[in-house]
Each structure stands twice: as C-alpha cells, then as structure tokens.
Length: 105
Image (cartoon, rainbow, N blue to C red; front, side):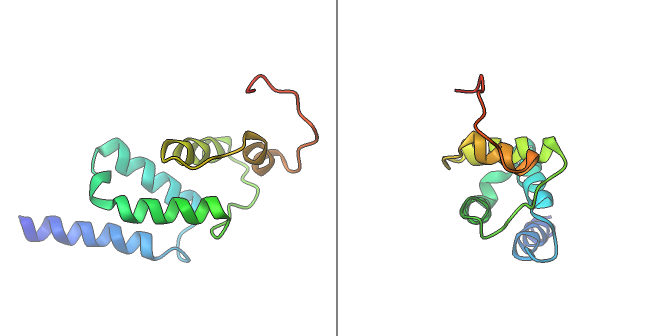
C-alpha cells in the first residue's frame, strides 16, 4: 500500500516537472485540486516553484478567455503570498487595461 502511495506521489511530481507538456492553466487547476483534497502538503516545493514561475512571468498565461482561470491564478498567487496587482490580472483577461475605476481598491 505504501509503495502505491509513493508511486502516485511521484506521478504528481512528474506532472509538475512536465511544465512544457501541460498548460499553465492546467497547472493552476492541479494546484487547486491538490489543495482541495488536502494533500498539498506533500508538494509544497513543487507548488511554490510553479507559482513563483507564474508570478515572474517565466510561465506565461497568454490572454486567457476563461475568467475562472484568471480568478484561480489571482487567488492562488495571493494565497501563497505573491503580490498581485489586480490591473495586471484584469489585463490578462481583457487585454490592455486603460485607467480603470474599480471597486476593488
């Protein structure tokens, strides 16, 4: 039983390592699923590395058409302590944002 558990953990780690094979949106969904299942403590290093690469722009989410992915990215980055400007997040969804008056401030 322990061998099977370790094998499954390694499969999830390989998913994080195969960054070029899966989209950044899928990685965000994977991180969210791991957190909701309560097993994210096994993958703290991989989650931090992935989110820091997303935050620095190394892994780029090109103008996402799905607001869910934009909101998920924003929540995960904020939840893990990465500073995220809402205008930057909105620009991913809507394109370049021209001086917005928002209730978010």
